[in-house]
Length: 451
Image (cartoon, rainbow, N blue to C red; front, side):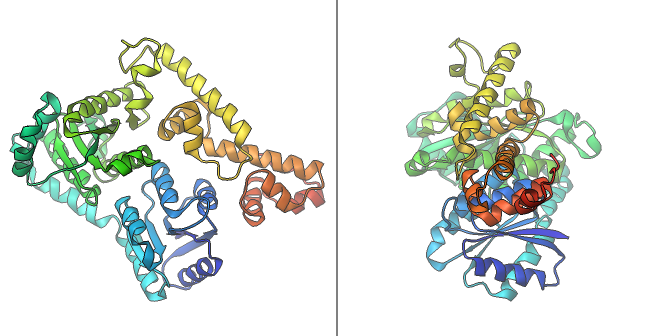
């Protein structure tokens, strides 16, 4: 049975979509409804979701922001966008982020059922076929001796002049005009790879897996205008390009993190290959490629410190974070523990002062402690012992319970006080958390269960 979350600020649309799905012959278990992105995230963080159907234009957190956050936390959830004719630019961006389908309003029931069924039943077939075909290639795979890989490796390892760029792009049959670029370094972890958890130690195994991995990476990024290439065992590199407007827009690091997390999950899911993925900063100009590659590769070294984590941004670990400018990107582990505990203490303090505010975002908390949202979320769970948003919910629920039991505030007042967009949504989360709704707790004096 599939759980579907429908998000739209028009309740008639939400209820209509939900009714169509419930009355279809698709194996739908539960259809949850949220009025905006913030409510949707509460559902996503509390219950397993198999499919998200979301509007684009919503107040507070729009559909694009919701999709970005979802993919940073759970990139395997497929997404369908519902939107109006005039929002094609937004829809195109959503498709680039990995959204599977885009449906124009008003929704036609038969079309919705067709799209949902196809997405739920066939979402894995394409990548599975690619991975299987890759292994059937055996020794006919494209290896590092091909000109494309040799050229790009020379560019990122030795650098090049601007006069060489035009000729090189003609040779590649593809150009990246940027003018801003970022790099991902995908490090394939051979000892943790292969079906049945067998180590991929032979030359044949490693090269078959590397060839299959390149195919999976290219298929995952088929909506991105980028370059991928082998960059020496065990790395595959990805060059992403951005306009100046994109470089200056908020959320660009989250976008890169989302891409890296998608790659990691697809390699694990379809090829059983574990990976560590390093993310560089964004820089302007093709001549920055060698520095971007160095940063991305250095970021992957943090998998040695955090083997249970997969995606690493160089800005979280640069020597600027240390007092010693000459320090490498992997500092003294004792200093690392001290710094990490300090970051989490600062995050807990910030959350404690802001959890009541509506629209509190993970990005805001991360900015307050000068870490990326991805790394902060990982550290918080590792050090504090629970998910960071679970901690926000815990504080909100405990404060709501205190207000219910000690004041005469109305439900809508308490909802507003602890940071929820609507009393109805607050009640749903409260009952999910305590097992009773606010009025039952108030009227019956129930000793609610703690979670």
